[in-house]
Structure formats: structure tokens, C-alpha cells
Image (cartoon, rainbow over all chains, first blue to last red; front, side):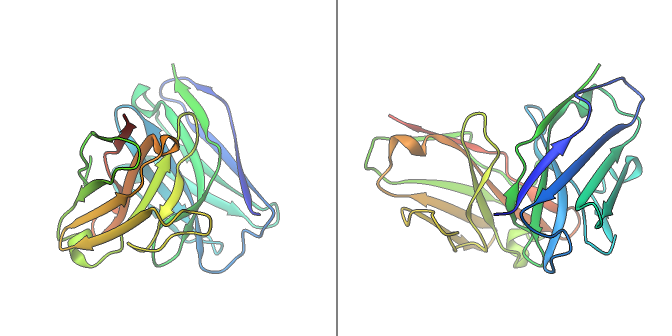
Length: 119
Length: 110
């Protein structure tokens, strides 16, 4: 069974860059038909999609975050990453990495999530 | 911004049927895009409950069902059980905003 695990600092200072990595195990990040995604959750914003990437490196960003987000994928390491720049307290959230079914856009596998606090 | 509107809460007695609505627009649900539903138990990541509007992943009881009409999607839970207490989210694709989630509905079993 494919599993996802987020990793990264739990505390980031305002104006700095938030960096997270998601490791894929029990399956291949090069699988066809799936995107790899970051989604965050906070009491204020609920569940918010951030971005997704295909194994070729093609990326799709939430328009509201596009100017601050960069996603990348490393197929040799079976991992993908998120960088969110110029963070503020509003970026404090639980960040999930996830697998998204291409064409239908549903998340069939979620990571356990990692809390990031901007302070 | 929240593109898909859900009622904040619904409740029912054990064994009853409850429905959760998810109201979108012509740029998402009404535009022909599928709706998906997730169940989030306390302290856990969301779990896929219904995909492509009406299909259940393996292991999801048939007490859960989904439907869609126009810009409105619904999740029905029949034979409500204590373990169904959770927050339920709808999700779709929006032609301008990409992936969008609902506001979430807390289900309480009385």
C-alpha cells in the first residue's frame, strides 16, 4: 500500500520560505494517472489546495498562491517538495501531501500531515 | 475563498438517514465536474469516501452514497452509526480555481 510522509520544519519565521518534502513509499512516484499534491488545512481557510505536480515536472498552482509557490519532484528519490515564500501568520496550517487521481482530481491517498507554524 | 458551500452541521439518531448538501456553481459542479467526498475523523487526515460523484472505494460501507443534480451534490448516510461522527467535505474541480473543497459539515450522532 502506497504511503506518503511529510517532513520539514515545524516553525518558520515570517517573511522566510517554508520548505516541505513528501516521501513516497510502497509505490512509485512515476506512476501514470496520478498527480502529487500539497493541501493545507486551517480553521480559518478550511481545506485549501496549494499545488500539484506530475512526474514529468509539470506543475499546477492555486492561483491565489501561485506567486509564492514552487513545487518540484525528484523521481530518483521518490519524493516531491513544496516551497512557499514570504510566509505570514496566515500560512500557519496543517500541511498534507497527497496523491491525486488525474482527470478526476480526487485525493485517494493522504499523508498524515505536518503542522507548520509561522511565528 | 470557499467555493463549495456545505451546512456547518447535521445530526441524527442512530439508525436514521442524514444528508449533506454541497452547493457549487456552473464553473464547478454545474459545469459537469465530478464531486468527491471525504470523511475526517478527529486528529486524522481526510479519507476518501465517495469519488466521481457516486462510487465508493473498497472498504467504504454502502450506507454512504453520493449524487449530483445541477449545481448541487449530496452525500447520504443511512443507518447512522456512532462511528460516523466526523467532519465531511465535498470537493470538485473548478474551471478557474482548479481543485476546490467544501466548507465541511460536522455530523453528530445523537
